Amino acid sequence: MSATNDAVVAMLAARTGTDPADWFLVHKARYGMEVVFRALADLRGAGDVVTQVFTCCTAVDPVLVAGLRPVYAEVSPDSIAIDPARVLLGAATRAVVLQNTFGIVDDAAAVRLRGQAHDAGALLVEDSAHCVGTLARDEQGEPVADVSIHSFGAEKMLPTRFGGAVWVDPRLGDGALRERLVRDLVALPVPGRRQDLAARLYVNELRVLNRLPKGVSGPFRDALTAAGAFDPPVAPVERRGGLSARASGPSPWVAAQMRAVLPSLEDVEARRAAAVREYVRALAGVVQVPAGIGDGRPLVRFPFFASDAAAAERLFNAVSDAGFYAGRWYRPALFPGVEDPAVYGYAPGDGSLATTEDLIARVVNLPTGVDVPDARRIAGVVLAAIG
Image (cartoon, rainbow, N blue to C red):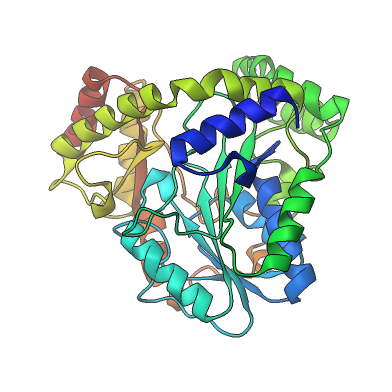
């Protein structure tokens, strides 16, 4: 591993109180998930990965690519993560995905979910894409997950746009599986020149695409993506159940970006937490706010739930019209939507996911990378739109 990679894993380890030897870098977090699920499928055979549809399709694509079957559980309105009281696991379960949605971390639920996963002989995989460098913990302060996936990617906590990290618990009971995970993660190739160049050019390409008329930007974006010259957050193939490139470690350039921005993480979190506290102060009691947010966590977006789907759309438009970046995450399910839900094993309208689909229909999310006065103004727009 290069000196730059060593520096990144050392910072992640120092932040989390873990060993640098248990951290591994990837070009994108989804590639880390792919490595984990492929190893599971190879060593334990075909089976199920229990996850949620209140997520991005790129969090499910690695399951499909690995030859496993996604099975969807209900989420809790308090954490927007799998509800341990309603999850069903069995002999076919190979892994359970604990998603720290928007950066909400429910330690108690994580501990309960780990017990359920281990009782079923399954792995607990933590998706910390929204809160890089944060691990769910038990009462003794020890990490809960068997494997934890972190993202430096586009629209996440840090402005790196590419890069990810995987933590593998040294206490993992299955020694053969841990050895396989470590071997495969260490052996990941460096991205090819075209993929590395696409990462370097991403910001400038995005600026150009955003200035083009809508009728032109879409086809041009697709053409660049097909040619491998543009690497979007979600590629067309990733809305069909595939991944846009083979799993790889970070290029030297991406690793350097990770190293440069990681020291600013605490300051970024403090700013985002301040915005979240302002949203909670202004909106709690007016709209449905997930209880897991508490007084204010450093969230990548601030989610709340409108009274119904039509109200959610009105609020989204009101915030956008006021000049602020309102978010549709994760409306629709498997965001930003997939071409054929059946490929993902998802049947919209499934009564077993009534709570999740209700939350998806009503979710609105607000930017947290703003200062407190702007957060106050955005909350005011929401309140005015509610009337």
